[in-house]
Each structure stands twice: as C-alpha cells, then as structure tokens.
Image (cartoon, rainbow, N blue to C red; front, side, top):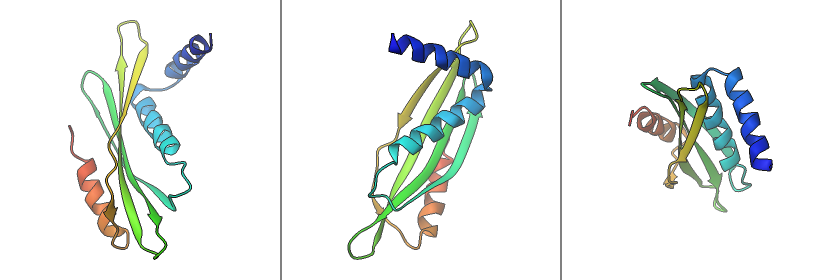
Length: 124
C-alpha cells in the first residue's frame, strides 16, 4: 500500500514539472541524500549538464571533502546520472545511477573543481 501511495505521489509530481527540470531535481535530491554524512566537511555541486534525445538526462556533478587529523583535505568526486523517460501515456519513469567514489587529494580546492568540471561535461 505504501509503494502504491508513493507511486501516486510521483505521478502528481511529474505532472507539475517539465521532464528536464524533474531530472535535475532528482539528481540534486540524490546528491543531498548521499552526502548526509558527518565526515564530509564541505559539499559542492559544481555543474548540471542537461541533454535531450528521446529522453531527458541530467548530470549533477560536484565534490565533497573531509579533513583528516593532520588538517589535510581529501576530495570525493561525485557524478549523478538521472534519466527521465517520457512514455506514450505521458507518464515519466526515472532512473538514477551514482558513480563510484574515488579519493584524490585537494590542492586548495580549485584544481580539483576544475578537473571535475572537465570530467562532468563528458556526454556519455
């Protein structure tokens, strides 16, 4: 019953949003849930990259970092892929996939942000 209720709510939400906007919102929501962890000291959403063909796709890219006991920062690059398919009856189905984490040292944050922006704009 709970799943049916959630499905009905999702249909109502879909009818209120444009599909491309919906894809971005799902990506942001997934990023926020994924990063609610006390070990992260800072979280940044760097870029959203929207494209459309027969569906609407959105990448939400960014990074989070945490400080170790020696005051060194380590960054976690993030890439969230969200796809919204428009079906024949006008409903939308969403699929979300999160990239694997890799850990890289940060150099004052700027180097890492630029590097990740480059990776984010890859349209695959």
